[in-house]
Image (cartoon, rainbow, N blue to C red; front, side, top):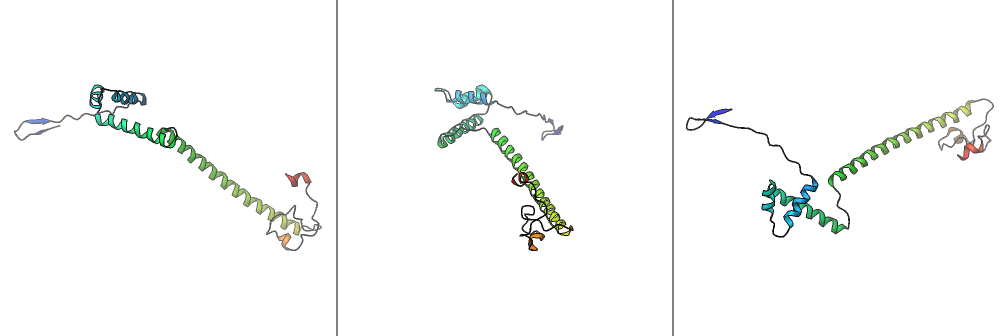
Length: 164
């Protein structure tokens, strides 16, 4: 794209895209260690490798801060990527736990409804007495509230079922 300048000549603007370079951890460590050698300075190492001195200084600061934190807590320095992966794993496990908790609550409600139906059916069935507590365990059971707790129920479940 061109535009006229103050003296009448055309000015051409050249737009280019600059690709950001990615440095490996190993290369960063090499450059930081090289800048820490006796007789070397940050500007020389940065110029030699085509990076900004401020970038090299930032890498040195991050490396020293991470080391200080590790020494203060007597712990290893963990990479940010590993922390992100572990946090994602925690979120996934919490989500799974929430789903399982909901399933348990739904099943408990269904079990209560089934117990209520069994108790009320025992009251309606001719020739049967009120079920005992081993069969009808619900605190709000209609049969137990009717005062039938002392009466022997219809046939009891086998002991193996009551224990398990």
